[in-house]
Length: 162
Image (cartoon, rainbow, N blue to C red):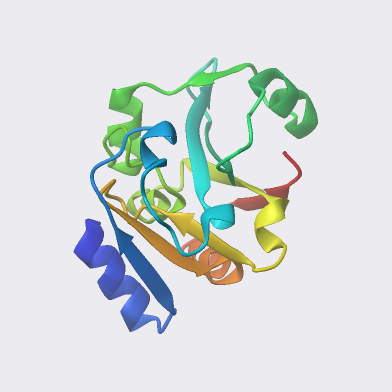
């Protein structure tokens, strides 16, 4: 799904959202000059795989957090993890680097990737800011709406402390 198809999907399901358009960004650092309505709810996403390339994980945390993959592995019982390459990203989520987002799971028809969502997104204001499969915008929606959307599409969503 491209950006417009994501908006159409959200509209058809009557999921309320807001959009902040911005220049193309590839890292959290590049967002420093962008003015956001909910900066504390901005998400950072890491797409990783296990050492056998059998399991893929999308780890989504608040933008100011760091993720220790060894600690994540211990806490969540996975095999050793490393960043997935561009080919894996395209084959599993149909996304380009810089556009990684939980909404990319809507492209994963085989449900190969699991979402590990930081539980802090369920704290007030319960909003998450993520790309709409394109790094030129950020979509703001209620975290529970995102979780429900993904689970209804058959995706595993784990709410965890990261």
